[in-house]
Amino acid sequence: MSTAPAAPARSSGIADWIREHRLGVFFGLTFLASWWPWPFYLLGLAPTAFFACGPLVAAIVVVGVTEGRAGYRAWGARMVRWRVGWVWWVVAIGTPLAVLAVAVIANVAVWGAPMPVLAELPWASLALFAALRLVNPLDGPFGEEPGWRGYALPELQARRSPLAAGLTLAAVVALWHVPLVTSGQLAAVGIPITFAITLVYVWLFNRTGGSVLLTVMFHIAQGTFSYGALGFTGADAARMDWLVGALWFAIAIAVIGLDRQAWGSAPRSAIAQRRPVVA
Image (cartoon, rainbow, N blue to C red):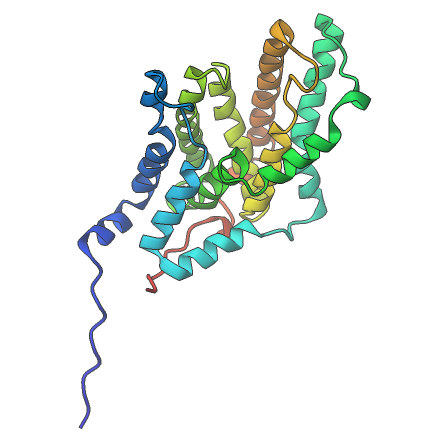
């Protein structure tokens, strides 16, 4: 005597709603997880205004609810995608360092800022700091990249061109950084700079076939050398923000204008593929 196969268990209404609005839920959770201490900071009741781990936390939650184990496997695969060609490793690590070097040279040559003495830099401390940034969820590279590039960008590119997806993500990421301005951790000019550099991240992510690892390395190289560590203070340090910002805007315009093919369609490996939930 045969029996009919059991019907698959129906997911809860809230899980279905999250699947229908997964990107909006991701953004909402990201802002909530990162911004919740901001009002308490403004009232003098919290030591920080911002947690950088919001995108990571939001991605963990939304991927788990919407796609389960299969989603985690695909998401994790983007994190460790390292076979992208040595040229892209050079681009990811070398571009932020080159931007910093050009800004330093301009600051010294044109405005007479003190020349950093490379031999006197705390290289051991900088190397340790860079290594910690690779695994510290409370810092930008590991706290942001798995969410912004590992989850949000592939979802955006499932329905939009890379350029439209990049402009959308750039606006969101720039807005997300606002509490850092109010707490003095980021100059106001950092908001438009963030918009521009997000477009460079999009280009790098797509050109490496959706490698979050390469965007993490890019992020580490971008922020490991502080202006203070290079010996810049006061007006010289403030000028560095403008110089670095101008260079990132120039690079964003260049990668859009000179590599138009990259902005028409993203590689399949950089686009979200909807998967059924496995409990």
